[in-house]
Every structure is written in structure tokens, then in C-alpha cells.
Image 1 (cartoon, helix red, strand yellow):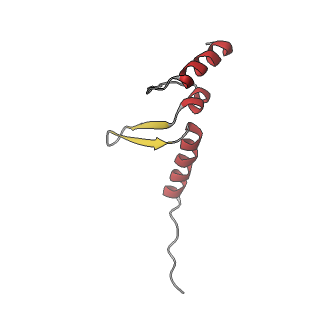
Image 2 (cartoon, rainbow, N blue to C red; image 1 turned 45 degrees about the vertical axis):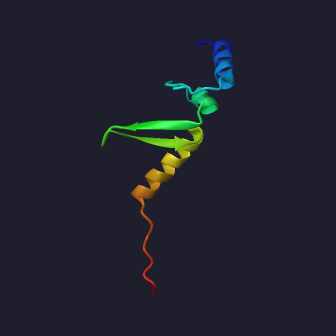
Image 3 (cartoon, rainbow, N blue to C red; image 1 turned 90 degrees about the vertical axis):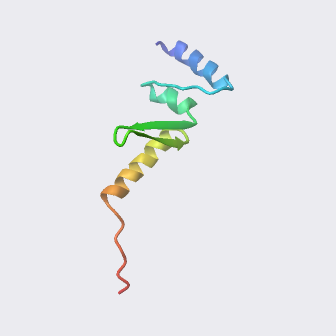
Length: 78
């Protein structure tokens, strides 16, 4: 899709007051329109719902991965 068509589509969709289920590889379009991200997880066949933009989702996902790979150290009280 050319840029003028993308701009028109984004404008029309942003003015729509209903629910839109948007599946796209265009992260800029998703970031401009999404208020929730539904992340379908392969195991255990579930879905995680994130409220926010695509950019906010990516930051939260990165922080979550870092927290899992580097759990906080427990304080010994010494």
C-alpha cells in the first residue's frame, strides 16, 4: 500500500468509534491505532492482553524478559 493510501486508511480507522480487530505487519499503523495488544501465546494456548500502545507493549515485554533472565537478588540482611 502506498503512503497516501496508508494515511487515508489510518485517518478513517482512527475516526471509527467501534471496535477494530487489526492484524497487520505495519507496526507504525498498529502503534497509531491500537489501545490494546492481544498477544496469542503458543503455550499453554492462552492470550495476554496489554492495555496501551504497541510501543508501550514492546517496552513492557522487554522489561518482562529482562526480569525473567535476571531475577532480583535477595537481600541477606547482613
